[in-house]
Length: 380
Image (cartoon, rainbow, N blue to C red; front, side, top):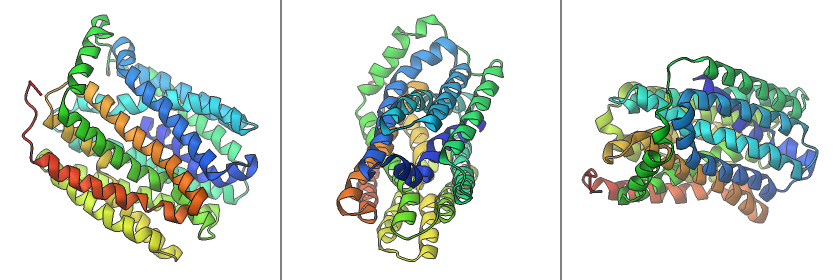
């Protein structure tokens, strides 16, 4: 839980500070989105390597070291004097975030293999709690004229504390053995990459990650630049999106059994499609707040539930599957940030949000198609 709080706070402090950062350093929308795209590429590369790291050092120790790296990245971010200098900080955030993204959910799956959907939704709620607390706290700090650099430094300290707690754990997610460092891990990944259904789930993860990323990364900037909201009001808006995700993940984790995960995914995609259509058409701040909360409810289940459902439908190593599927989600989250930045430079940020219903309509179609197939047998 603390690991997800630290990860979320470091990742989502940048969106709420984005307007202040762009004004301070003279960035365009596409440059700001490009930073997230760069981080996403580094997270993706780290995800692919994380299986070897976990096999060598164990999941808990690897996550602890990653939190320390991410904290160092936040410190560098707080001192960056120019756009070019931000890339070194982004590199450390990408490397640290990639390991955390790769290994926290497999660690939970390992601890609760028989009912992972319930526990994954519960633990992933703390990502959204981190988003909510960061948005409210940072929005208030910026309103009180606290420098965005001070915010980054404070969150870097929290990430360092999280890393120390993980390194203090005993006996959780231990190393598997040296034989898993190469041959076994690669064999698991080769088998998964050969499954046709894996690529379908990767596409679903891309679409779900993109829908969540659109609101997480650009909502605060939209509220400030298109609707005249201050940093506090913009933070409240994204916090409401996070609050919707918290409520939904806790609720789904409590109510939805493993056998109903597909129905949860389809219902959420349809609801997200409806909200995605309404959101760019809304002008007043109060209805936008309502839309953001409902969007959080609709999109909360995508990441954890898709991973749990995919492992049920594919006969494969769960840790390797979680890591590879996360790659699809990270690519979706990062690419939509850059794509929407480009669209924002061309025709405005409001128009860029039409990408959400476009993606979710494809997601609905793919979920209906996947349900027609029987679960994957040993031969794929």
